[in-house]
Length: 433
Image 1 (cartoon, one colour):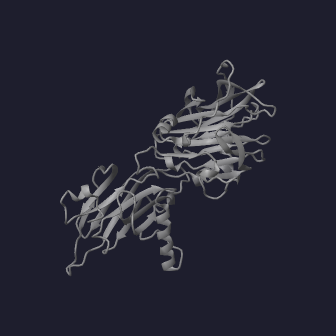
Image 2 (cartoon, rainbow, N blue to C red):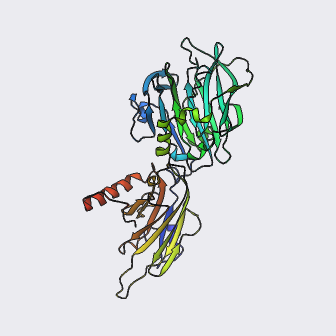
Image 3 (cartoon, rainbow, N blue to C red):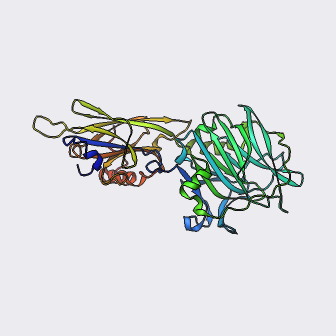
């Protein structure tokens, strides 16, 4: 009983044991902070100068060329450079950390080259919220894509006109912020902290998967820095956790008098960059399922115990199954059968093996599990069963369910590797049937 928190021990249920169901949807779910992922591309944050990886990582290069380069700025020593290359650079960014939220935010600082209207080449696509930078006479302007229907889109200019250098790129860094409501597929755009456009319609069906793409151009580099995805407005997040290491804000672009917010022709959504076969394939394979909720039940002998409502213990939210062991005629404790049911929002091609579960000894509350009892994933379906051996049924344990990558990955992989080593062959889901 020593593994159970003191407040639980005060319930005086000494013959009973507890199964704690940690709400591990993302790496941030067990702390009282909004979920977020941030990349400043700095060496002290682990970003090495050079090409981006093409293997599984938070940012993955799908085609073209992209690399982290040294570039001295007021608040930065390294930035991400996309292109120039043929084919154009396409970088996929994993948004798993915010994938369960109905409203999500993306903020990024960019210095893009202006393209002609004929080129029609966007540089940002966040769940169907698409942004491009176009030449307008001798200056450049940011435009947002508005999906009028499943088969028709138009570009809408933001009215922000910025100076271009001799190479045709923005002379200043632009700080773009996107707020995307995935329930309505509507989004808003802010530029340098100021509202630009609101109520835009995202490309149909893209918000559910929440793929984030960064694109380069064929002949000129696109520079990217301070990429953030989160579940709250970036300004709110910065106040809560002092995000971006309290760096001095980079000066925004110097704009002329606001230009008219005109509508411009755009190709059909099927002709967009993200609709190219190689990029569509990557989106299908790398977009994580959205884990909305999950529940468990425990059967010991002929008795079934179900988890109760969410409670808060010492500042951390969890759910409890209070149960008592059962014994056979010889007085031996019976094993338990745990059933895990996941409520996931699935997009076509989503990889269910990324939804993982783990049962472990509750070593130290709230987030320090001990020895792993069983582990597996949901690749065979959204209902899984696992056995809690008789020797563990009298101990307090914790259950975690999350979408990889997440905090449970390291003990999960170690347990799976031990299982494979003990069997001497490739294993299926450990202790799962």
